[in-house]
Length: 298
Image (cartoon, rainbow, N blue to C red; front, side, top):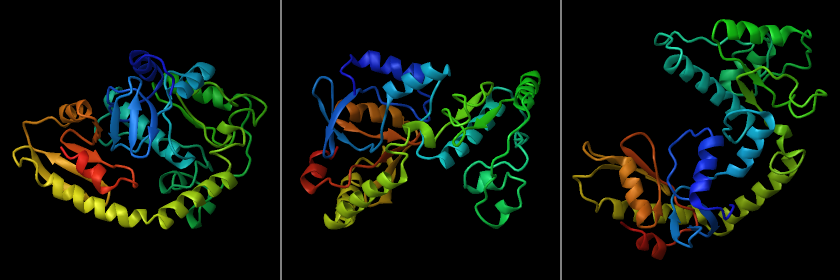
């Protein structure tokens, strides 16, 4: 990460990143093993196992003149998240009555291979397998008129450009009138992490490390140790400890705020995040050992 002052990094994230969960107020610069460090050299136990890419999101939003960017792991996740976003907007902003929001899809469309997007297509091939839509070129003014109708009736327009974006159709984005733009395969220009061959080789190397270093066994043992330590916390604060291996969460009793507890953990050098108002998730790296687990016990 850039060596810019923490506040400038926070400002960059706030301006360009569409957050799907609340971020801890810490700007990380480097990591090694289970530890990460901020610009002042302070070390933290990484119990987040997540990522951030503020500079990339700034570049993309400025290039395409969009307000925010939300990074996902695949085109399937992109499309599913877009559906969630437009439904939330319908209920929270447009004030559509509860359970009355509707999505309209293009006939014979194809939006990746999840059940939600495949079942939205009218193409018969989608119902017996994973589906595809081939290559169908709309009339010159079709999408423009669709966008005009959406504006007239205060409807959000989402366009999936996983296959058609970034120059594939002879234009940068093929179409420029949507509220939500979905990009995917073309983002790296044929380089990692989009290129399947290289991704697979990296995945193979990662799996070999998990197997050769017995990381699953380590996760099981460290998970048991984690549970032992968590069950020693005051029952007045911690209602329940759940999980297995190194994916765990604690549920907080009424009267305590999980976010405030995460901030307190941050101050003593441990990064964890809230999942809903009264739960905190702990997902340390698989390489954590017993001495490190006992060191970060709180």
